[in-house]
Length: 235
Image 1 (cartoon, rainbow, N blue to C red):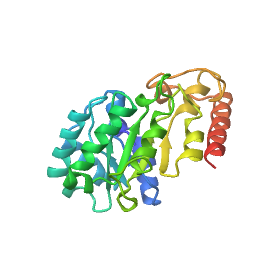
Image 2: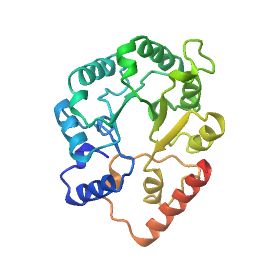
Image 3: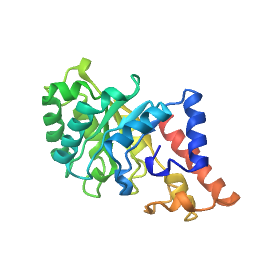
Image 4: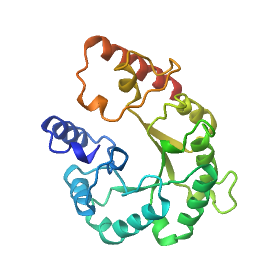
């Protein structure tokens, strides 16, 4: 759920209905799309829709700034959110090694770390040089190569978005690291709007396209075929 679309009647009706059905709703903060939202507003939306998870405020690519925002939110706003809402931290880094060091820093702040239930790994870590960076990072976080983390201290791991650089990443993640819980993506629709399937071997990533575009039956069919394909990848 993206905060910048709240206020659109269709959007609001959909999420209120899904929340009423008990669906798992992740409230994003909109940073990836360049949206700015106040901490108070983020808390208000968490309450209005009774969300399952909230992506703590983050600054793209900046771990220290993201850490500061998380401290502020968890210290002054978390108690005003629904008691069942879990909080997730976006683990930024320039590459795998940098992100791994940042995780160690995060874990070293015990009071803050204990309030976080989910680690979100952003797609910007996936590069041509390190297409498997997020999988390696998830492996590290769950202690397989990390002497600091014991099994009872694991956090759930969610991949924020699919990367066009490696569309099969979600399939590789399922096979490699059971610790990765989930991924969100609009890729089937982004690709369908270009007349492609997600496994066609091309790179497509255009922000906002799928929010505005009208979906004709042929485009919808392409998108649903890619949805089914990605579902089959993760079983």
